[in-house]
Length: 310
Image 1 (cartoon, helix red, strand yellow):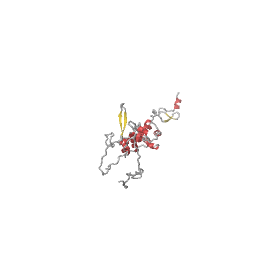
Image 2: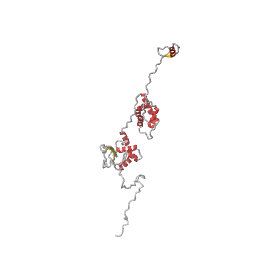
Image 3: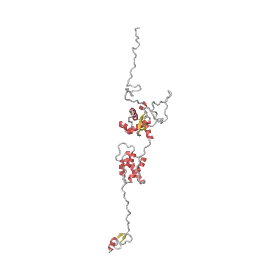
Image 4: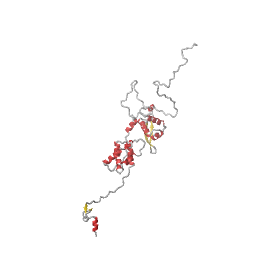
């Protein structure tokens, strides 16, 4: 009874530790070195961090907004002052989040009567645009429909939806161009001269390449300058001088503003000249036979008439 079983292991053998630097599927890949957070953290779902349609800027901006405390500023001006991206890129990212339900902006009237905009951040939105009437943020994630085991997922019949920034730009109507001065004379030759001037602006600055619609809108404004005795070179100088260094998003709107804001006054009033003096036919004087001009009753020149007077 005191004999021990030499074939039994002295203690349970533990499995060899896996090499953290080697992946089972391939030699590369990401390795997570995680530390549990106990304070100052926010939970972000993979549906946002790995969203297949959102841009990287929109995903990062949503993570930042979800980490802000209630009441913190999340408007374009505040976010532009916080990050290096400009207001155009931040506004586009906010529109992406609105399209996919991660963000919505509501207008409320305060007790003083002032209208303010409140930004609502949803950490678990519903499928965007599936239920337009419901704009709230659910407390639980929307359950996905189950499918029988062993059946492959059904492939979509239609192509993938377009990028959200393209969808937003297509649904928003284009803002109309500012009004331009109208000329008093709409002669075809004057409008053609104004059109030719606008089509040559791109030679001075390639950013001033105008479409046919924008040119037709701006031509009356240029004609209003030309009919005020402004030379075409002066009009071209007023439209192309001191342009901003940044890219021109709407060059036609900038030209329309300049045509209106810098419109010169009309030329000074010039009274119309009287009728030209009458021009009589040349005749010969009866006294000295010199040629002179005078009305019909006169038959002598001025000198002969003066000498004949007593």
